[in-house]
Length: 225
Image 1 (tube, rainbow, N blue to C red):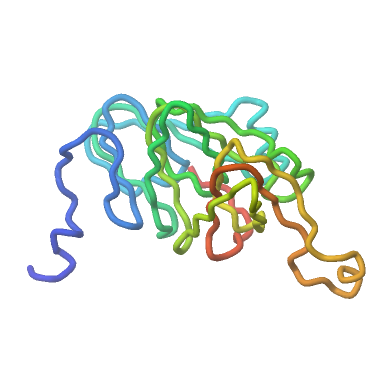
Image 2: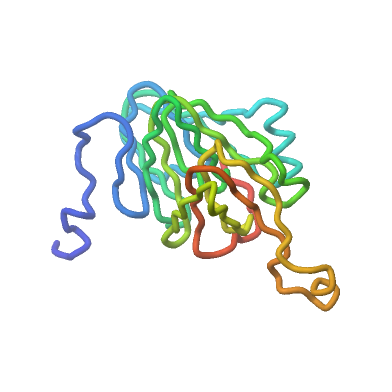
């Protein structure tokens, strides 16, 4: 049988290194030897001896997720084998997090990560009771994190001299040490007359970066286990 479908770039090869690698732009391959974590429902194939177990966030984490509609429903993957992860054909990127790093990521943009990374849902300081931007996932430690984004992301440098303002429905993540607050970009009079649709943004100040996607978020849909 012959077809471009069977080209080398589409064929899954035997693993040569342990851990996380990109299978292609839309999926991540993880060679498991022990344990790793992934968003529930994101496994698309596996081979070997692997077990998948729903992972709780603790009472505090589950409460925050219920209040905001955000957060991250996880599963633990244990054993020896290979697994592939993807979500709605979103673009995938691998981030190497080193000791001292701290990355804040919207839960909807997390695909999978090494068990060596610490993960915590934290309130976004200064964000108040805004939908989608109230709680985010903060990753620290040493390991790899796979982040996904609908479309090609934009990484914008943030400096003390030039803060950045982002739509809370478009933001993917940012350097966790940046200061955050809400910024109102239109006047009360403008809002009364119907508004621009861009009334409030998240303001980021300090030294670091922010990642945004080229569209606003679709309504939240709970992950399927």
